[in-house]
Amino acid sequence: MNWVPRKLHAKFSLAILGVVLVFGGINIALIHRSVTNALSSELEKRGLYIARNLAARSVQPILYEDYFSLQQLVDEIKTLDADVAYGLVLDRRGQVVAHSFGMDFPVQLLAVNHLPDRVPFQVQLLNDGARLYRDIAVPVLNREVGVVRIGMLESRIQQRTISVIQIMSSMVVIFLAIGIAGAFICARLIARPIAQIIRAADTFDLKKADAPLVKIASRDELGMLGSRFNEMMIRLREVYAEMRDAQARLIHAEKLTTIGTLAASIAHEVNNPLAGLRNCLRRLRKGPGNAAQTEAYIAMMMRALDRIEATVRGLLNFARQQEVEVRPLSILEVIREALDLTDHRLKSGRIEVRADLGADIPDVLVDRHRLGQVFVNLILNAADAMPEGGRLTVAANYRVAETAGWAEVVIADTGMGISTEVLPHIFEPFYTTKPQGTGLGLSVSRNIIEEHGGKIAMHSAEGQGTRFTVLLPVGPPEGRPSAAAAQLPPSAIGAPL
Image (cartoon, rainbow, N blue to C red; front, top):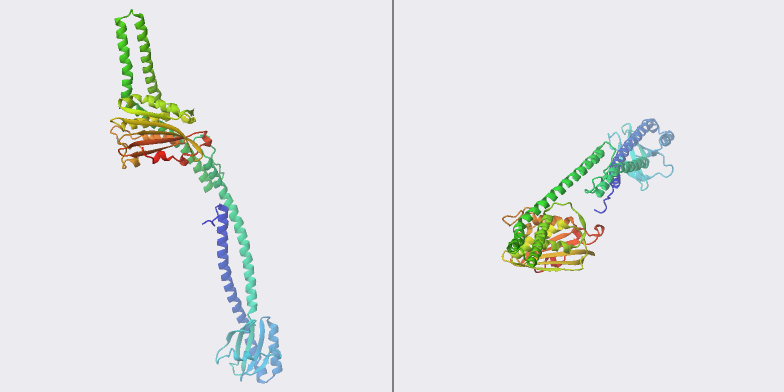
């Protein structure tokens, strides 16, 4: 329906045009019919009156055969009414004794409109090819003396009807113009506040607390609509702020769950240097006078302490709930930090790590801690999928898709894979197949990636392993494509593992 206008005032004008044309046409048709019937009835009554008057006055001239006086009466009736086209008088034998045609009497008139006996009058329409006549026959003394016939012009009725229709058509046009103008004005009065609401909706930004709201001064339904719109936008800001707070708490809660998973392996990571420290102190106690041995053991102890400090610092940094800080940084640093944090878990699980980190990847605009949480979660999921050991591949590359640059990170394992029944639910919140799992890890990870304008995809085959691919846009925010437009490369979704 491309012919339907989009503008409100155009729709109003079109509706008014249709209504006026439909009802105007109906009115014109009804008026035409009623005017025609009224004029025809009035013409017939006048013709009948004239014919009866002529019949009453023709009795004596016909009886005395005063044809001169009779002709004067016939000629006189044409001056009485402009609609009288002709008149004629017939005697009782049906012979014309007077008429108004002069020397050219149409003899064919005698063959029509024969008045039956004991009929007060008879009307018949006649057409000579050029004009239409209403022929009225009236008896003279119950037809004992003769018959009078009067011809009334029907064309005058048509002319008057046309004149009335022209007046009505002009009124319809005037009403149409007034209606369209009124519709246009009313539509503008209605459309202007609605356009203001549309502009406010288009420019509304949930992240800006001081975004302008609509201002509609009217107190009618449009004013109420504007007021409700403002209330809705304010409530949306509040809900958005609550949602962001809840999301931050959810992300932190999931981070704490991940820390619980890492706790056992990190305890071993700390216990080993502590055992080395205890051994060094024991030996120093036995030989406190050996300066060279003391210096060597002190150096070993310092390295052990540095290792413990680095491990604890990494864990604390990961656990700390920090404000979101989006800034350009190398994605390779975040990947290495995630691998360092999960190093003991991977080694204790007999998992071989293959890192293929490209060197020519531009910086991405991300939050280090949240993105690190995503990579840690994906690495731990891969480790859980390989309880008997296996191979973890972490690759990072720079790709160009849809005329935009993307940093691609692939984390793949050779574990048990995911069944086809579980695959559709893998990113759903609170869905998990682990006895101690929360079901939030992958859901939170996807939210974090999409917050950064990226996209995450997963491909898995049962018994063959799982591959997660993360795409993050490279470049300033204004030059980025939307996450919906991000086209993942074939390696992310369909290539064999």
